Image 1 (spheres, rainbow, N blue to C red):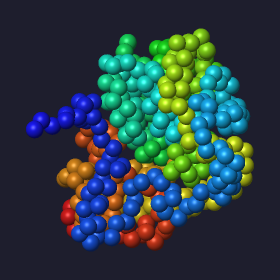
Image 2: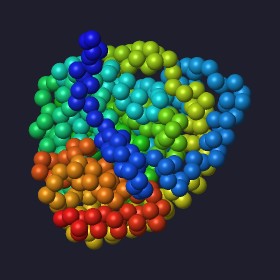
Image 3: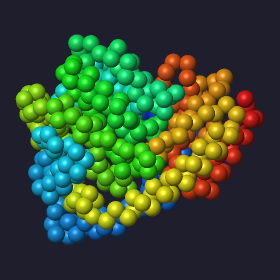
Length: 397
């Protein structure tokens, strides 16, 4: 009997954040208690979705908003997103649509822009979705590096050296997952000039934009710094508004309208073809962006405390070096060990139950080794986890 063969485009697709959970499941079956430092879902820990967002969705359901919505999104959500864009300084808005998480928006926009054989510059380290989407499209993932010695800022000279006639876009993740870096205005302006010079679109993933951990750090939305450059700004409710399971994101396309006159109709066709995003959850967007923001202050205070503790503990362990993050809820320490970082993460969870994600799953410079931890867990969990990591390294290396 012949087997049904899988499409070749799937052969190299990985998603390290979830793939490492397979190892954790095996360890759990053998009796290990898992201490999860792996997933960026605040609701897996002790955070809660703001009550007024839940009530907005509940009331929408009660009032019959359970059918299809317009493909772009409901009017009040689109209006609230546009107002938020203007507050952030994005003036040349051409198109907005809601999506099933920022992930769907990324895939739709990439599909509308990039042809097979073309390339997109993505940061290393990077959120793994971008790599997976490009492999699906038959396009080339062309990495540029973030500079660990410069607080994980993009290496602008590396970006310039990677561009050729087949380059269609540059991806920015700011604040960055997995490093927690927040990009400087000067570097963003330099990247904008590169994009304009080469007629390249910028994908600006800003899903963590409200989770800034230092008062002196300013998050600049890329599209706010130039009205002509073509920017696809991505955001949603998952992180700052602690509603990841709702899968409610959005996309803002801005820049020179004439340059976008071929791209926009193509993107709009794809948006219509998938019908619409979750309808009732769209009613939380206005409530989130224009309503009570108290939860953000509390979340940031909690994350500051847990991040400071995590940095102190990680940097006290022999062979580990961690750069201080300025946003989001991740730390991406380097580790000096004689095995791969995947083998490190695998052995760590089997021997101790501590679940981290190997740095190679996010991409990194050749010859370097890292792992990602989230700073979302309560202090007791963090303390126990770092004790076990320290003991594991001392015992094995």
